[in-house]
Length: 130
Image (cartoon, rainbow, N blue to C red; front, side, top):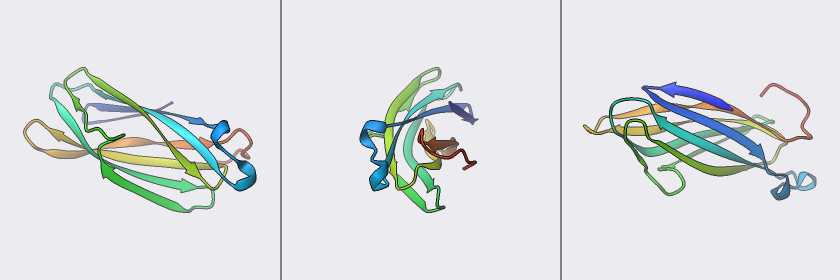
C-alpha cells in the first residue's frame, strides 16, 4: 500500500495485477488500483478533477486528465472517506503511476493533493526499481 497526505487529505492506493485480463504474449499487462481518499481535516472538500502520469518500463509517459474519478466528484465532510477502483493497461510488465486530485473547499478555493507514486509490477517482471 502507498499513502500520502496533503492538506489533511490522505490518499491510499493499493495496486493489483490482473492476470486474467493480461496477455503477456501480446504485451498487454493490466492492473487495478484501489484508492481511498480520507478527509482528516475540519473543512468539507470536493474532488473536482484528476491528473495521472503513467510511465511504462520503457519510459513511455501517458498523461490522463479529467473531471472527477469513476464518473463522480465526491464531497467529503470532515472524517468521511471515498473509495473507488479503476485500472490501467501497459505494454510492458512493469511501470509506475503518480498523480494528483484537484480539490475544492467550501469557500471555493481550489488546491491540488498528491497521489503517492505506486509501482505496477506483474508477477513475471524482473525485479527493477521503477
